[in-house]
Image (cartoon, rainbow, N blue to C red; front, side):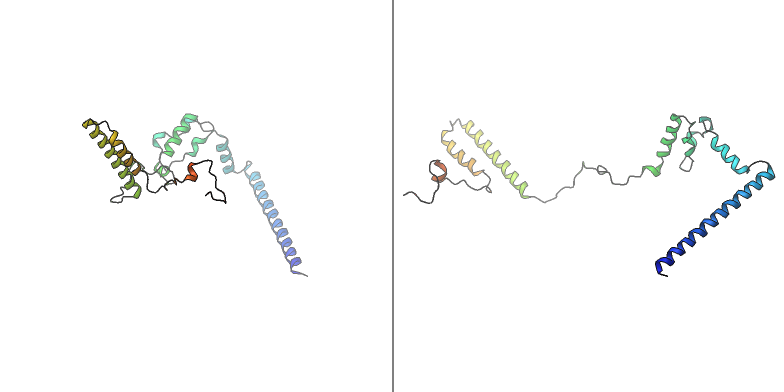
Length: 196
């Protein structure tokens, strides 16, 4: 015999033995129940009280007062079909107000206080420096403009100087525009033969 055949026969033997023992156990239990019923004339008393409790529907009058409930109380009785919805909600509200249910897990996005920020201290970024420089240049232009207005100058001589100041405020990181004739003259196209 091969290994596979022996394991299959062992499994069949196990299953048949298990089935036989289960059937014997069920037969013995039914014989004991029958003997008890014949001796007392009624079924087992424990089973009858359990079935009576199951069939009896609990109502609002059967419930303990809400004020007396605590973390160790049995709230399952409030789930009975006979209990009013209002009383059930009050009991559940009392249950979930217990400290056990009010522990934050820290997984909510807005648990932290985002209204306060850590200061950067003495750290000054290059963007901050650039913004401060731009503010200073704007203030200087406004100051120069006020001085001109106060002096009563018509401003024609200083317009050229102001345009130079404005061109100086252009961001130094931007590349300068190439002002060659090729770009200004649309008729002059690039080709392999240069013009004399």
